[in-house]
Amino acid sequence: MNDAALLALEHQVLWAALALGVAFGAIAQRTHFCTMGALADLVTMGDTARLRMWALAAGVAMLGFNAMVALGWVKAADTVYALPALRWLSMILGGLMFGIGMVLASGCGSKTLVRIGGGNLKALVVFGVLGLSAYATMRGVTAVLRVNTVDQMQWLLPGGQDLPSLAAGLGGTPGQRAAVLGGLIGGALVAWALACRAGRSAEVVLGGFGIGAVVVALWWVSGVMGHVDEHPQTLQEAFLATNSQRMESFSFVAPLAYVIDGLIFYSDASRRITQGMVLVVGVVLGSGMVALACGSFRWEGFRGVDDTASHLVGAVLMGVGGITAMGCTIGQGLSGVSTLSLGSFIAVAGIVAGALAALRWQSWRLDRAA
Image (cartoon, rainbow, N blue to C red; front, side):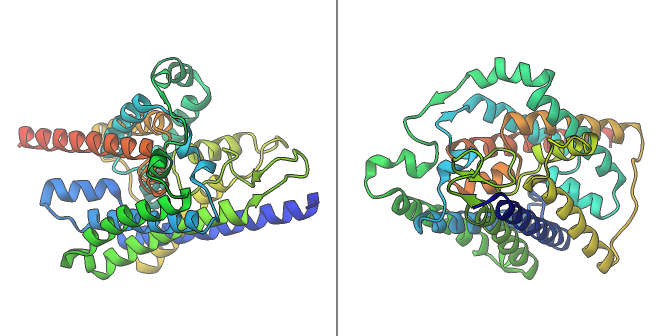
């Protein structure tokens, strides 16, 4: 493959990612897909509809990704989620910080982008603070602290940290183990999501199947369409237009930082547009189009000092925590768990624990004020 063909293929990958980002934003806006909202509904009203929507999306993503592994199209080892180094403390602590932060900031990274599309100016502030704190945790002062402390606590596994690799002693090929484990866990999530009437509503089915499907589609775009066996410049295997140099799907912490970096250093020829960056733009566009079409677009600002402080603190916690945990409710919660990564399951547990603690703290404050 020559340089011109490679550039053309990279552009195709970016356009496909943009289209999937638009689809994600449109579905999330239309169905109110939100992990924090799902947990809040459960805690405050005992309503499991949005939690079932999230479980359905996770189940569909697992089934789709592991079907591709079984077919030999992709490998979990080609993602950042299945590396041999399991940074368990980073997953736990980062997850807790992110979970608390998303409650204080009224939503995770993906919800922030969806809210921007709907006219929420508070979310625009959260975007900026989250992106800057994430960038600092990747390469700045908090990055030094992260690398020298929590990242040192890790287990080096003989293979990858995905469950099919950990279950190598059970026999069978990696594809066969992925098909079985992905089918069992993903199928169980789908079955639970659809088990009651609330999980079979049109909104839940659209949100769950739709979001899960675009996660799988982006894995295909990045891992199959954008995969090059031998890059003409490096003569090595490559995944085009990704920041990690591995195949990627949806995630909304580091990409926000890369968007800010791209805006600041736009004239720097060494900078390039990546899949994660166009996803950010796509989600805002998709959400905005649906909000305008449905008449739900509304300008919204901060209510006061307390509201501003809560969102600022939450944004910082999400930026630092999301990078430390290597993902968010989408990056780890859907893309990561679809690979059956043990680290992703740990990170999601931390996010849920942090969010539940923050929700109960907010409830306690309201009761005390009343």
